[in-house]
Every structure is written in C-alpha cells, then in structure tokens.
Length: 396
Image (cartoon, rainbow, N blue to C red; front, side):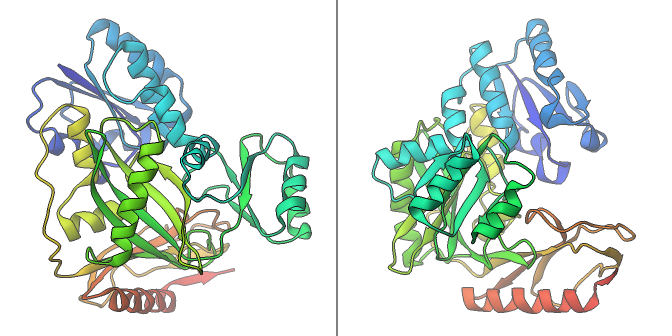
C-alpha cells in the first residue's frame, strides 16, 4: 500500500505527514518547485516548475507506478482534481474518475446536471463565438457574468453591465473556455462540508461580505451559526445538488449559491475540494473539523474522527482579504492591536509595484476575527479593515 500526493500548496496548508500518521505504506509527494524545500520525510519527493501545467508530472507518475505501484492518489487543489482522476482511471485505482471530476470542474457541465434535476440555476451558455454572448444578452439583457468554465478563485470573472463594457472586454478577444450567465442580484453564500460514503455528512456555511467579485474592495465572509435557519435550508439544497451530480464516494466540497430578494436559493457552482480564503481554518477553529485532513484520510481508506453532533459554539469566525492596489507597497503592518484577531497573514511584499487585483487571491493581507454572533464578527471585520487601511502605506 502506498500513496502519490499531487500538491501545489505550501506546507502550512498541506500537513500530509500529520494527517497520514498511521498510514502503513510509502508516501510519495509531487509538489510545486516553490514549496519543495518546505517538505521532507517522504519516500519520494519531487518538485516541478509551473506545476499546474507541467506534463512531466503525468510522465513521472507513470514511471513511478511502473517501478512501485501505488494504491491511492491524493489531490486537494482545484487544478489537480482532473489530473488525479485521469491517473486513477489509467492505473485502476479506486476513487474519483474522470467523468465525475470533469463534472465538478466544468461549470457548464455541472449546471447541465443540476438543471436537469430541477435545481434553480441562472440561465447560462457555453461560449463558442463572441456572437453567442451578443445573442445571450439580446435575449436576457444586462448585466451578465463572463467566466472561465474551469476557473477558480474568481480569476477571469467579469460582470458586464453595458454594451460599452462588453465592447471593452471584446477588444482583447474572448478566450475559448468561457461561459456567459445571468447575473443574480442577491447576497452570495458558500456551502462547505464533507461527503462520506456518498452521503452529505457535514455542512457549514458562510456569507460573503461585499461579494467575491468586488476585487477592488475588501472581500470577506462570516461563518453562519450552526443553528441558523439558513444553514438547515442549505443542507437540504446541497443534498439535492449532490443527488444530481456524479458524486465520488468521498470528498470535501465548496458550493456557492445566491439568496434572491424573494428568498430563493439559486445555484452558482460547486467544486469537490475545500474552499479557499481560509474557510478551512475557520471551520477547523469553529467545529474542530479539518476538511483537508478528512479528505486525505478518506482517499487513503483510513478511519476518520467522528464528526461533531453538538451545535454548541462558543464563538463565530470571519475572514477578510485586503486587495492590493495598482501602486507600490511601501509598508504594511505586521500585527493588529485587537485581541479578537485570531489570525493575520501579511501577504504583501514591501517594495513591489503591484497591478490591479484580478481575483480575491490578489491580496496584501488576510485577517481572521472572532465574535459572539454574526453581527459582531462583521463589525470587527470592518474595524480591522479600517485599521489596516490606515496603517498600510502605498505610493504612486
């Protein structure tokens, strides 16, 4: 028994040796070259430049399998899920295979699946030609959303509110892997959790603050209380989504939904991996559930801890990501003077000339706070953001 891990994360997010402490076999790691020095103690460890697109990963997996066949493949990152599924299928390894992985990666395929099951979804269309976008807008009107069908982290997503904005976007051409869909006016929520034995076994939810498409302003979220009436509705909704999808036996998941002004839950998209933006850390601190740890152990056929049944929570958590500016970063704070700041990660590099943010991932600081209820957490996110912006220094 052995495992191959495909990894793009830094070691603080990828605690494989901790998660697999009782795995009785070889643990092999293929990882990004930039994080290679952070890992040790693996039977085979190999680093790759441009890991996401480096096809030598597949070749080396083939050579390793021929030399020492492995029985499990772990891939936690959005960009590695299809790659891992193809390798499992090629080597006859249990776990998620290609058709399932693609359905959770391709935003048009996933909408096809859930629409057929009657899950409310915005009107959408795969774009093959710019006139597809023009015809879609002619029929449904503005605003619309353009997004890569296989994107993540809101990278490449554009909200188009007028013909002028559309023409500006089309000046540079439109990539071939895009879809267009109706814009839904309403707050966005995430539904996060675990599927175990094809059953939704754990669910948490967050509400976005400012929304995940407001790249030029702070983007954040507040984790909902487990007794929230919305959370119970989200559990029912996500169960229906998974019943429509080619769901793997086990996975963590991250689903985004809208809540409309007439109180309807509308599907946006779903991924069979843990959400970003430190959602996993917030859930770990709040519930004691390590989503990536569970996912890794389940993939390796190891037992997992019993999931919490109690809804007693001492405090809630929220996180905000401070966007970079199209300026030079002169200085940024190394700590914040609030005892309710649970975690602060200064991500900016002093002296760097930044370009405008294209995703919430383009941030110079991430701040996690806690509070007794959702309102307090949101107030503290705003207070921490204001303090940060007063003390960070930019120059033109």
